[in-house]
Amino acid sequence: MKIKQEAIGDVYVVRLSGQLMGGPDADAVRETILSALNQGYRNILIDLKDVSWVNSTGLGILMSAHITATQNGGKVKLMRISSRIDSIFMVTRLNTVFQVFDKEDEALASFEGETSEGQKS
Amino acid sequence: MSSPRDYPQDRVIEFSMPSRLELLVVLDGLVQSICSEMDFEQADVDAIANSVIEAASNAVQHAHEQNPGVPVHFRFVLGEDELVVEVNDAGEGFDIDQAMALDPTGPEGILKSRGRGIFIMRAMMDSVDFDIRMGKGTLVRMTKSRSTEAEAEA
Image (cartoon, rainbow over all chains, first blue to last red; front, side, top):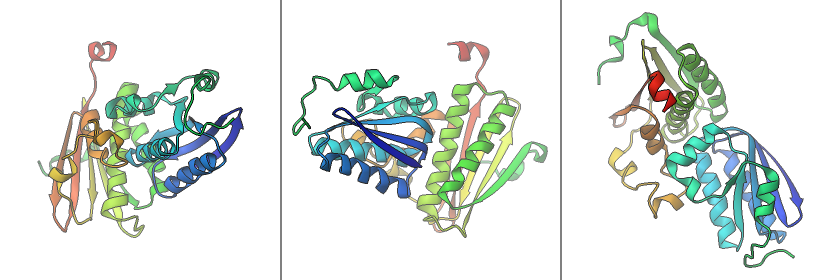
């Protein structure tokens, strides 16, 4: 799996590609989320457009990112997931944990007006 | 469970893979090809591929602890209207009741980072059976029938 990251306004966008399935992926995603939080970003958007599939360990990585961000006053949202990944989200009900967006502009706009503890200004 | 030897050999594809996570991509490609050959609907292809990847991930990560020298064995039986997939590892086995004790969609389980693999397989396949031989390995057998046209349109 590869990770690219960029800040767009107050949102830290993490773009993943490949497959999300555990191993070194877990540490890499966690370190990226922690790096964003340490830089003061509280709004984190994970782009899964180029992730072809996730397994349950990959779901665990996303849950850990969610928990890490929440414990630090942040929020993780997801965007552009495939129908295959969406089917796993529906079955596991992770669609009730994460807000998922089809389009990047809608995802970015969704953070506007949200106030979370320690929000970067 | 019936013996794997019961299957007609002209409809069986067998595949063995070293216990390396990065090779799950190769397995996924094979599953996609088999499902395409059998004309499964795309939603069913996704369900089968997700489930096989889960079973293989368990074998690689938990049963074999990513020891590349220990292979995972797969057997695909291409029936007229049904695909049977067997995943065989050489691990120590596990307590299936304990593994399924916590509902991963419940208020406590949903926040856990683990414990979804078997749940995903059971939700996505028509049947999932475990033959756990403690200390001698585990055989997971999953089946999926092709959806009828009416089911696919529903």
